[in-house]
Image 1 (cartoon, each protein chain N blue to C red):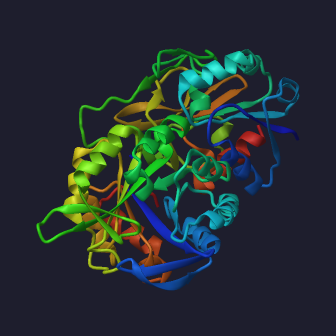
Image 2 (image 1 turned 60 degrees about the horizontal axis):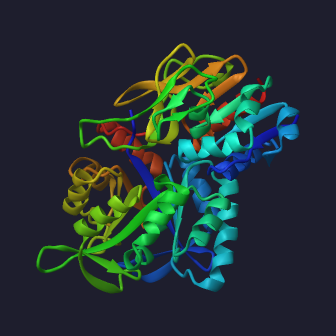
Length: 196
Length: 252
C-alpha cells in the first residue's frame, strides 16, 4: 500500500510520518502530483496559518488536485480546516470539500484560553474512522479556529461551544485533533484510516 | 472538557536525564528516551526535555536525541536549551519536536519571539521563565539557569512576551524548585488570570495535594515536575487518579 503525506509549507509533517512508522506503516512525504494521485491513501497534515498555506497550495495547484482525489484523504488540524469552505483566519476561501465554516474561538470568559491547547474528549463518533475508539476518548488539540457543526460532522468536541472534531464527505476525512500525538487512541484512528 | 495536563520534565546533560535541587547538585536519573516512553505509557499528557548543557558542539547531539524521542513517543513534547536562532528552531521541529522552549535568549533579544511565532506559529513557542521571590515580596526574572538576577518583574516580562507571540508560559519558581513543598500558587495564579495563554507551573510539586492546589488555587493549566517522577516517589497514574477523584478534569 502506498501512503503519501502531502508536503507543503506547514508544520508537523514529520510527526505524522513518525506516527505511521510506529504503527508499522511506511509513507512518503511529497508534493509531486503524480505520486499523490497514484497513492492508496493521502494524508494532508498541517499546523500553521490558513491564508499563507492556501496561497502556497494554490500556486502549486495542490488545492484542485486534493479536491479531485478519489482515494481516502485525511486532513489533520489545519489540513482539515483548509478542506472546509471558508476560514475566518485572514478571511481565506478554502477548498470547499466540506460545507462547514472555520471560525475563531471567542470567549467572553477570560479564564477560557484561546487557542485551545491540550487533551479534550470527542463525542458522537461516527464512521469506521472511529472503530474501536470509545465515546468520550481524549485526543490532543492545538487550535484557535474551529469548524462549525454541520452535515459532515462525524465527531464533536466542546470548547466554549460544541464544534466539529472530525468531518467526512465521501472519500474525504478530516480531524481537528492530532492523531499523531494522541497516544494509543490516535494510533487507533490512524490504523482505521489506513484500513478504510 | 479540556483537561489539566501533567508534564514530566527531563533535564538532559550529555544525553542522560539529570535532576538537581534548587538548580544545583545534579544527579543521574536515567536514559531520557526510556523514561519518556515510560511516562507516555503511564499517561503523561506531554513531555518537556531541557538540554541544560546546550552548547554549539552539543547541538547536533541534541537534534539526534530529539529525533529518537520523536520516533518513540506518541504524545506531544517540548525541547529547550540554548535555542537562539530560527535555524535552531527549524532543526528541532524538523526532527520531530512539537514545541520549543526559550528562556534567556528571548529575554536578551525579545525580537526572536516575534520571528519564531511568525515562522513556526505561536503554538510551538513556549517561554520558560525562572522566577524568584525576593525579600521585597516581588517576583523577578532570572536568567542563565537561575544564576543571573534581573531587575525585571516576572509579570511584566510575561505580558510583554505574550504580546510578542509566545503560545505558552512555563513558569519555574526557584524558591520552590526541588523542595517538594508545593508549587508557587500566587505568582502562577497571577499570570494565569492575567494572560490569555496557558501557564505550566513548575517547581515544588512533591505530592498529589500540591498538584490539586496548583490546579485550583494556582489556576495552572498544566503542572510540571521531574524528580518525584524520576525517583518513583509519585507514579503518574496514582497522581491522575487522585486528581480525577477530587474533581479536576484529567485524562485517564
